[in-house]
Image (cartoon, rainbow over all chains, first blue to last red):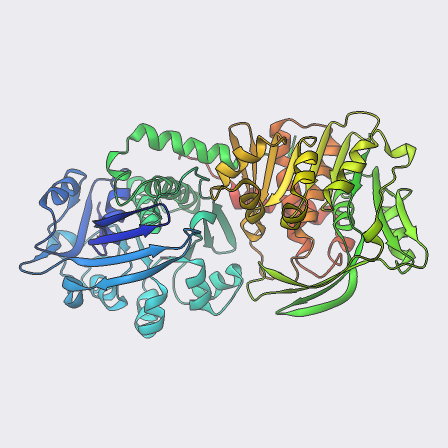
Length: 306
Length: 306
């Protein structure tokens, strides 16, 4: 059993109304791997970095059960860099800088030991790269999850639609779901997107939680209301990592377990936003996770009968 | 046992991106009373209308267990009129017309039979009118709920703060909670507002659900994801009406029952937005409500253990 994770490993500079962080550890695959590693420890990472990436971070990742054989290190090159600034509401942001660097010519190459994963998490990347990964698999995974963003709908819609045909779960935010489907209602958007391939649609609404659509059922996982949100960067990836990490650990993709995975993912995301970069995730204990899962129960538990 | 409802009874004209309705039945107290009447049938209405109000609507209200002795009818005058236009996202709107008419000099006078209610719902009105109602009560109600809006924070903050000292539950939307407290985090906003008087804070987030804050606990009631939202007008009042109607029926204000009331209120609100004005509420059956409550269970039910 293994979980294949594909995505960026990057440096981020982040400005929020309450503080900033310069050239800190980021990237979709980084957040996904860290979050997943709290539930599952056989993770195969596919990504690319430059020579500037700190060795200590690689050691930390490996100590969490993340295999880095598929992580290409490009000599003399720089890692992907993103700089963003959050608006006052912390829900929206502007991208200030995107330096693709090593990502510009990224060709994901799967080591042989990576080619039969049971679970696959395709983090946000160009749909062609996501497709190249699927093309190298030698057996059908139990579950393939894909994350994407509006940018690819604008510049690579045909490729995105091709790769969507091959995935089981799409994770996407509310505005992106509306853009991809042309429907304002998220219920109608999910119905339209399911016709493109994925059986499960996860619509992420940031501080407003996340919805899981499957057949005619809808499940809603709230976001935990927090006293302080320091930095929302990586929350969606951390959610996805917790979600697929929990599924990989249990090996169960029944709807009831998917719902549970939504809560496990939301719990991880609630930690992520409490500090910049991976600061909170890198010091998190299992006891804190268990406590937080209980908070989700308290937040949502009711009975319609007295 | 009775439930005292105070608020506007009005005509609305509504424009949405998908349709419009001209001079239809509206008003906070109308929505509150209709929603509450599905759970509880001893409602005492305090409001004011003009001679233009249709008699048939009064008969309908009375047939729902709504006492209209405290509803003043001003000869030769016109009822309150509001016209609004929703933006494309249906979450925000512009007010196009506000004709106060009879509301301009509204002095709420409670008939003797109204003066000992167990439950009080003060719908959105000037804080002075809300206070005038409380001043006429002859016994302490079991629960007083107050709804307000940003306008009163801007033009009547001292009066609003006075009346807040005397209520148990404040219902308010997220932006208003931020404005009233000066806090962006809703958790911090609720803590700050609790210090102003109310023990319970209900923060309404429209299509993103509603939060109940009590002591150190938080409960979240989601909004039901709907295929079609026709008109959001009155959804907050309908929520409040379902909330207090359920509490009045059960006579129980323990936290667990408050949580249940949040779901009963959310269920009513989910019907309200499916058509213009009271169209959906006026044709709703108990069977539909029970079915919808079950949908809320399905939407939120999970277990953190496999």
